[in-house]
Length: 109
Image (cartoon, rainbow, N blue to C red; front, side, top):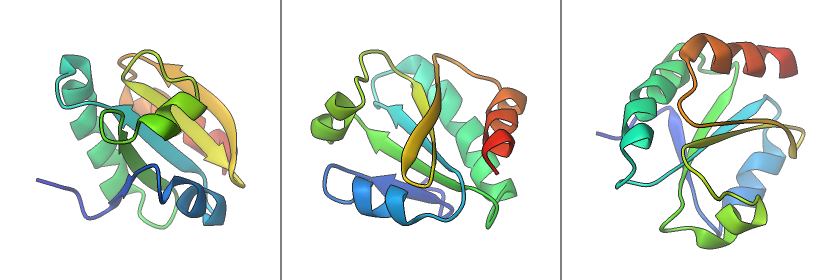
């Protein structure tokens, strides 16, 4: 079930959503066939629910949006990219714990 607090990004809306956000943005690059992505997904959803108004949380399905994935050099998933003011500021690859994700977001706030 989709989380109403998570923005689904794609090749068309990525730039406009990320660049217009006033708060730090976490973008989870994932694919449905990726087991670690499916494990990380609920963690990202939980952060989205707990941080409404503080951070913008978004996901990109790399199979459906290959252009944006290529633009950011996404070769391995899951990949988390952290944005502030429309610019990529940080990234983490692979399974990342909730506390570490929140710490990186708070560093951008």
